[in-house]
Image (cartoon, rainbow, N blue to C red):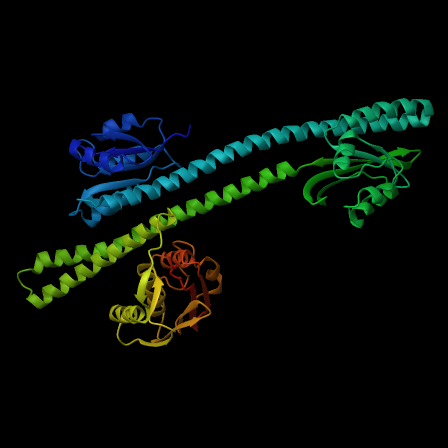
Length: 543
């Protein structure tokens, strides 16, 4: 049975613990509660913790001290910490919290939707990491077993070589002894867990072991094999493979190769050894031993893919923490500085000055809310709980409103040239999703327009579909960034000084796919970008 991840909550107030317990009760976690730092340390000894939610202000041992204690001996397995604190926390305490291991702050009174969303994100990352670790351990065990089997095979091959050398000596002594040795030799080869066959200097088969006979028989080769030329039997081999036998016969040397074959439509990864049998300084036989390493190869590929996936998850986690910390710190710092200015100059400033400061605070709060909305939307979309809710909308009117709103936000000096080629006024679309898509690509065109203020917005209906084209003449997208444009948190390398989370296009792509549409982006650095979105027109079923 799969164990639930452990979630630690620490608060010196029982009522607060109860509230957190109610919020978290429906999540699939093992909840560990503590009223103090010392109690928490005792309860989590030897336990792996997915996430800790800690109150900052507690008697005896405060939240920062507890966070340091929890992680001081965990080295590479640090526990992520979310601090609960009041709104009046200062910047020094914020940096102190991040220094003690915090990945986020939740301010009291908190919104339980935001808290649940953040907890779900960290639990998802923790569960993914645990799955990868378990798979890697299981794959390692399988690889160890195959390695042991391969070692036994090597030992059998050495024994086989010894038998062949013995056979060579006996050939020189007596024909009768050769016959007896060959019989023993055939018995040994038939007991091998590899494909084995022997050819003479005419490249004809003189022996095929039981394992290989059965394999060939299962694939339609049912005729008598002895005396047949290897080219006639092994039709899946290339001339390059057959030429290796010439080398062994001519140079009296043993060869060992790793090969990849397409045998009867199935790909095999093998280790093939060609061993010469020498009589009177002449190669009279060549023993071919083929060991199938396909399972080991698949395990190696799975291990490699899992390791790459683990690196991607760790990188995504680091990028997420970095993005959250950076994007939230800027508006919060603006709010803090504005409040401090109001506190100092409240009696000295006139109404106009105060309203300007209040607007700065409001704008910062709106930006923070927008960021939270983006993170929450990503979580909802990724959970696949988001569904289309189409309705009849006046499409051109909606799009013109969006254009006006974007100009209000980014400046009325933008020249947005709109062209509509629609066959009717009302269409059946999910209004909110369509608004999010168009707002995002239009705002991107304006944010990254550089010195150019010209943007072209075309909307064209043709063949049961609607094409939305947004063209700007701005900074463009570097070629190296294009393949990752739709990855969450990815931002182009030339937009470091422009605000953004890297979530917008990933959400847009998911919304476009939900509409059974597609999105294409063409761009050239310093010349501009063309974003093309095609959405099929949803038809209303007639009952």
